[in-house]
Image (tube, rainbow, N blue to C red; front, top):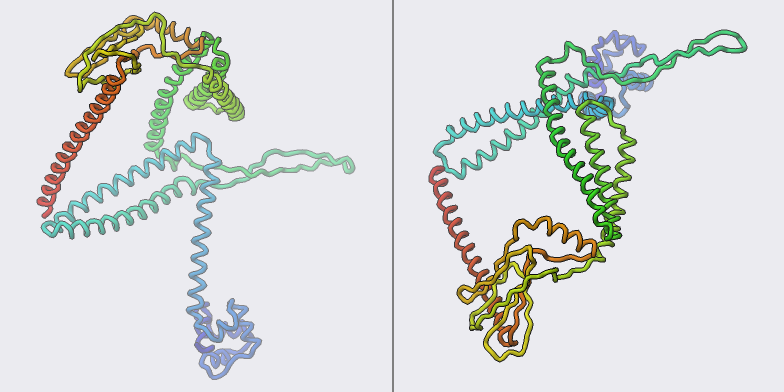
Length: 483
């Protein structure tokens, strides 16, 4: 690109005549005309002056296309402007949100949520209408091709809707909030300082930067304001509902705290339980206080709540540790006071077995020349238990004896204080017989158990086969409809 053409382009881009350019450079109009026509070239000092006046370097002026250089500069400026605007938008939004009160944040959140819901409904309706139209347009073509075309169009529409929706959302957010957000300076106070040397008063005005969210009444929508109030009321009702359960939990923890003194003999476990319940009471109280303050629009004392929470966590940790040490001191005792013992005798056969489920079985080998086994059934007075035989299978039946809840509670308290754990409902089954009969009995039991698993597995396979067959029928019907 010649210098002459660059000079002509620079003059036209800056809306200058040859006379005006000549005046800036301190030369005659004829000299500028000769430079642009290529009849002569400017001196080096004039070239440097042109570069300085119009912000170009020597290489750009002498060798490159000025139009392309200007377009590249403009493109870079636009990109930088977009980046600055983007980060400025984020900074302004963060500053605005941090300066808002809790009520303003809830209002902003509710309004933006409504905006998102409305946009989703609009784009959903448009998408449904377009889908119906496309179904009629492409009706009759191959189902595979229809699915491919449909997926492509759905992707295009989804991306377009997302971009448009985000743009609309951000625009509404900007004009509704960010455009009313500004920094102002407010006079905080005026101090009078008396200079002792001159005996005069100097008024010193101290300025302090303050963040203000300006939202005049004429910019608000009464309809939206009413919706926000209704939403806030429903949120408070929802929070109050959980707070209602928190009250019952608090009362329950108090009752539990009082009852825990009935197990004072357990030592470390009792201490751990006390500390754990106290931690639960503190956390429950914090929850109720936060709920109450939210409902009545009162600020929470964050420092006090934080200290209480730390104390509760410490108590909980110490209580769990001490309680775990206390639990290790407990021992399991299968025997129960005043056990009821029932004795049964059965003839041993090749397929005789005992039902596997729900009871503790102990096998004891004894010298026995007969082909019989003896079963001893031990249960507490809180359980009704018995043994029956059906089809070479021995069943153990048991159920809770109604009306003994208070007695069971007393027994549990007594055993806990004695650091013992028992089974109060499950009976114990002790089988006596020769080693051969005992081995056969155990073998039959495992065999029947495995057979029952095989039957269940076969039933599941048959059920799965039926489901697959039904699935194939449904697929065939779908293909017939599409094709």
